[in-house]
Image 1 (cartoon, rainbow, N blue to C red):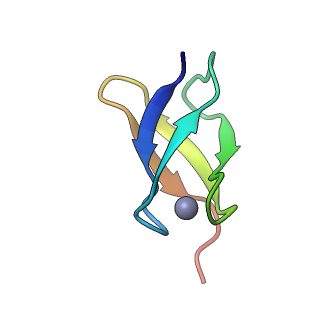
Image 2 (image 1 turned 60 degrees about the vertical axis):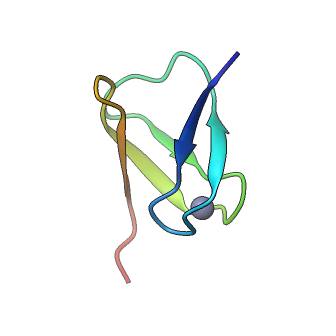
Length: 51
Ligand SMILES: [Zn+2]
């Protein structure tokens, strides 16, 4: 039972893996953008790469 998060890159919702902590880097399952966990509560992820 993961958490749904809206990807800031592609605007699609994807399910986050469990056990993420601040500073972790995960990947959007829709566009494969790398996202860094900026905050857990409230949940906030930001793109790692800035093109
Ligand atoms: Zn995405």
